[in-house]
Image (cartoon, rainbow, N blue to C red; front, side):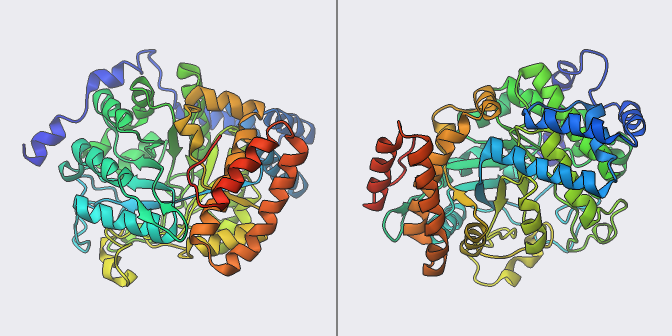
Length: 493
């Protein structure tokens, strides 16, 4: 099958109509603009009422979200930031989850104006990893750096279609590398991939993926059309918009939403994210598992990305993170190495739950000793290239514990189950126990001595809290902890 024939087979119109059958798209630009207009100049009393709703871990309405987006009073903005941190602590405690991206290839049939991988970019050297190369990349990530989670990234092209994705997932899960005391192994593979049909998504689910990410890039239909030529697969706005409906229909109940900030007005995009989350809750009883909010970055051979039409300032970036945390209090929030270290540090207190580290985004970049060797195979330019060890040390110095836990997914605490547990605060009990166990495991297997010195007081504080607040489970927990200290691995509640 040639590329054109392959493209024709991709989009299943019936699978758009199935979920758009109510006659009105859940993204209504006029409605969103109306809320943004009517939500201007909210009173302090109104803002505080909305904050209290967030603190009770309830998803905000579009009007309530618009009110928060329109807050300009510095004192009220500060109250919102404090509330965002309180929401995060209530739902996720002081845990941060880390991961690494693994780019499997940079072939793509699309021609997105802002992307270094677009098919018309002649400056990018194209490559798809072989399964042996995938294994070698994984050995570095799991065996040398110590990652337990990956986000595997795939372009839209027959060279990395569904069969290839499933084969690479199986190869990654099969890698096990001897570490200092135990072993390194990837325990959860999240996937950032193109929109698929329900049938293909069922196959992904059966392959054991974690969260399925597809970013809408921009929710504004007119802007979407300008960024994605109609002649390309990605030019079909509704096919992409309804992919999470298809994913949940296929059994994938952890989905990740996101936009690329800088393409359209950032307030509209936040409203689009909240509308999408509310739509999924209405249809399936499950909101987004994670929300990402990358800002557009420069990319090789892509002048459009140097001067995006709606650049988001640092101040507005912090505000949108705050509003997303308050509007969708149950969701995990991901900030990536697109941002520099200082921006990521500032964002932590606003509700961030996940971030990447030791990040390389060139195809085959983890095996290469020199980043410049894969500079012409990467999608954009990174802002933070610190190692996982350095990032974890900083987290520890700030009082955060890094969790490598993947127990919830293997104990079937996913989808609606985990959403209910997060809203009630119950998931935090499991997560605190497993965070300590997995963090101790990582420290013994991979941490530098400097990072161990910074991290051990955090672990001691966590153990004291478990002893005090969870006396019933403490004996079983400390038994597991001691087994970890003796070299056992992958023990969880």
